[in-house]
Image 1 (cartoon, one colour):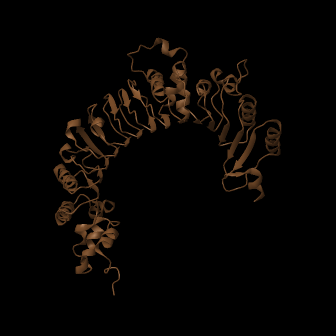
Image 2 (tube, one colour; image 1 turned 30 degrees about the horizontal axis):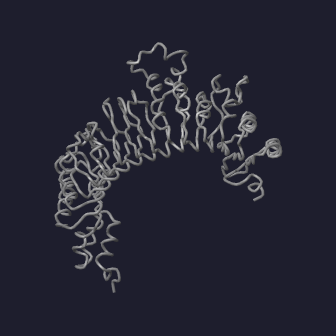
Image 3 (cartoon, one colour; image 1 turned 90 degrees about the vertical axis):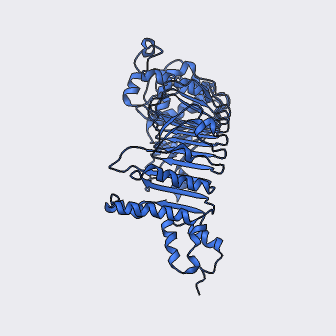
Length: 467
């Protein structure tokens, strides 16, 4: 007896929903019991590569393309009025655009709540696939993911009152400043590899909770009016300006500015900002205006900064806001990038509890001297003495003398420090920790009220070495 075929239709349809639509369709030949189940499968996963076999060079054959389009038409026709929960569509730009728009409209008409559209740029037609706004009017759509398409819409072109998640990947976007306002339920927005064409960009949405902006191109000015935002990830080239940055309820932010070595060198030229006019579109001015972005995130509680960001923030130290709510600051360091902004960040964080340093080695300048042990000066350690950090985590410890001196410096000047965790990577072999380092760690514990721990692969060194 075929025990699987005896299962209820709902269970069989649930099983088929984990297959691609072509694989699910093939089950109709098993027996009469399976013939019409495809019409009730809640999820459709349509991928033209299972027809066109691009790995075999067959995607250009007209008859194969036609067979795929006819298959999609038949599947959608077979469903009648039955509801579609999730619709995933992957196809080539060689197909006429109205065909793809028709499939999307068909799915939306059946109440689809999750739509994922990926367009493969066909090698003979490298243009971007233009989606029609007519097919994006739905009362049911909750999640929308679009990749490799062109969107040239106005806010009035769409009607998506239930949309919570919008992911745009490799999209050419030409929208007005009211576009994101027209999504009243939006909670998560991801803008990845978006081409803006030099336009001024406005992300304005009262309900948005998480915003990710990564690796976009040709930004003009960037305005972020997102008063309910909780999480913000910005890995991006500096915009021309930040006219509006409203993130009063921000909980966590990651700022990773994309800058070249030439940008870094230019930012270090003496008095460079004095001979630049405010209207100049110079990279250094763009980096100076990042200070406006920092002001907009001043209520953040957990802040993560990349090495590039920390270096170029030296241009906006005078306008650095006070981070009254900041509890945890995480900074990644590189030996070629400076800590010039570290002193003001520490002084302007009056309630900081945890400081995480992914590496302490950095490019030495006279501006970082009162936060580190690099330069001897009267102000040495001044920014640390006013900082209430209790827990210090040092990652990527390399066991150098310079790092050990920095640890001693932190112990001497952080007045509230109670715990230091020093992480050394375990690469599958026993690391050689010199007797001198072990003795100095023990001495630090004896001479201070701070608990200094050396951890290897997540274990205390003594415990780890005893295993």
